[in-house]
Image 1 (cartoon, rainbow, N blue to C red):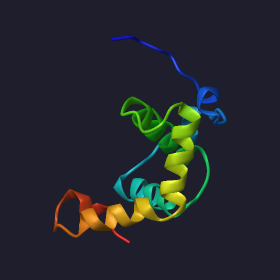
Image 2: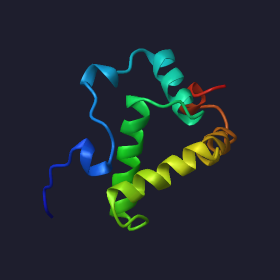
Image 3: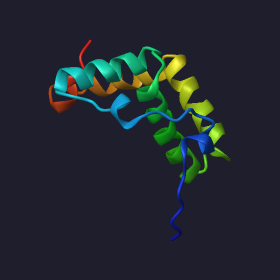
Length: 101
């Protein structure tokens, strides 16, 4: 195992202050998540893109962090990510129902 330090520039994403990505109570976090899934830009979306890009790189679905960002952005912007959320919600009541429309 290797430890690596990464920064926003490694993803081709802008840096943002920590307080611009801080969530809040459940409703605030739901609103942030829905905004991201509906295509709103900003530091919260960039954070999601960076995390998804790292996961895509680790599982070899992307060859670089910027490529992973592009793939994640495509999934969000095409509506595929929102469709997956709706699919998961279709399984019934539970904590995931917090992310309601």
